[in-house]
Amino acid sequence: MSNIRVRFAPSPTGPLHIGGVRTALYNYLYAKKHGGTFILRIEDTDQTRYIPGAEQYIIDSLNWLGLTPEEGLGMGGNYGPYRQSERKAIYAGYAQELIDKGLAYYAFDTAEELDAKRAESENDSFKYGPATRLSLKNSLSVSAEETAKYIASGEYTIRLLIPADQKIEIEDEIRGLVTFDSNELDDKIMLKGDGMPTYHLANIVDDHLMEITHVIRGEEWLSSTAHHVLLYDYFGWHAPKFAHLPLILKPTGQGKLSKRDGAKFGFPVFPLDWQDEEGKFPGFKEAGFLPEPLLNFLSLLGWSPGNDLEVMTLNDMVEHFYLDKIVKSGARFDFEKAQWFNQQYIIQMPATEIAAMICPQAEALGYTTDTDKLTHCALMMKERVATLPQILVDAAFLFEKPKTFDKETWTKKYKPENKDHFIQLAQVIENTGSDAKEHLDFVVKDYINSNGLKMGEVMPILRLALTGTMQGPDLFDTMSFLGKKESATRIIDALNNI
Ligand code: GLU
Image (tube, rainbow, N blue to C red; front, side, top):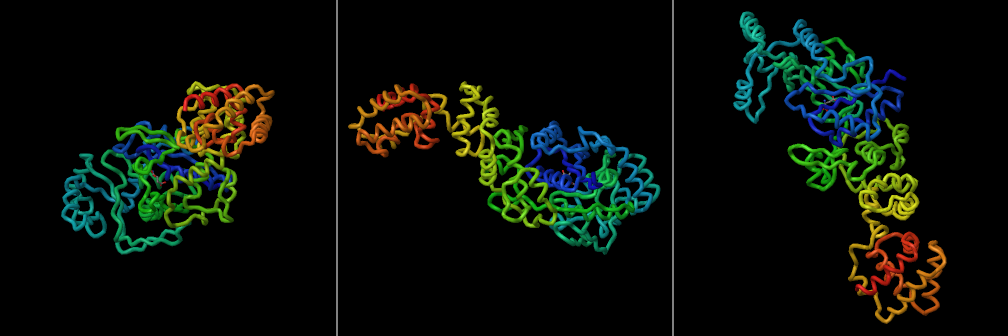
């Protein structure tokens, strides 16, 4: 193991969004690539946004995807606890250290007072910072007696003291040098009234104590990083390296992909199904996606290994993963591409494996669960679907009589004068010696040729009779699957029913 340590640090404020999955994946790839450690830490200090079930959802999602952490929540390790709400006492000590060093201060303004300030300011531009703090209610502006009184009452927050007129520089692994003007920053709260730290304090204390070497996270955290590097400096700690990942954009390319976009565009934006008071949100898993191609698809949202390499196993991704190949600009979410990756993966899967995976669905549908039959079905269908559950949907005619029938094509192709030929052909099929595909192929074509018929007037009719549609796998493979008897019956049924 190298000393590279990365963490995925989601907040259990809802289901894990697909953007979060990509963050987890990049952290995982980076750790694997460098023989480092991938850590799961739960950042649950914001009790007001805590959603029951979200933490378990995150764990279940990572497990399903195969992005299993080596260390962290549920895995153990020497740097625990890995749930921030269980580390409350640790953070208070660090907030105190900042106070003692004069790098943070107590603030006593009520929420209403701050709201009023915001409302007064132009375009909501109010900032609690170098320019305003002395006109607000805090230990820098009120007397020592008053300060002591407020502290005794327990009604205070602790705020970070941002220096005026300074340049704060971040050397980002993806974006290069990013500079912030300290006058643009606010004196962020470090410790809240309930004694809980904010994200900012807890995040950097934990990254430091857990010896995180690389912070790989979404672009939305870039502006907070200015505060974070200042905090590292205030504590006299060595800051980790930072890499801020590009946004994942809506399919239209406009704006960040959101929770609601799934319903809007008709595709999942979560790994697993999720239900909350806003409704039910479908997951990739339940929509029939497999973990590896989903990760493959996500890996390329913002990263490219070069050499036109697209279809990759998780190991390939690890092999080719470099932070400097991640781009700065947002990556458009293209659901069709996700389907394409899933399809490529299915094509490469052994049919027996597919058979095992679709067996429960076959059982639920009341179809045969015979392994040979399902394997045969998988072989016929695997190049024709984007997801595994689609196999039994599209190939329902292999297991039951067709429920829908393409009458229009039948009317176009069917020549009533050939009816007797079809009746005879059904008999030939039923009475022939074998169910083998090649044999049926030979027998039918032989009949067509010796009776002066044309392929184009027979084959579409047979296909429609057997499957109800013009789409489907090889006709003789289908016939072989159904068997001589069932095939003959369907031909006669079609002739009688139309
Ligand atoms: N808890 C933050 C989140 O929910 C983590 C940000 C970070 O990785 O520092 O995304």
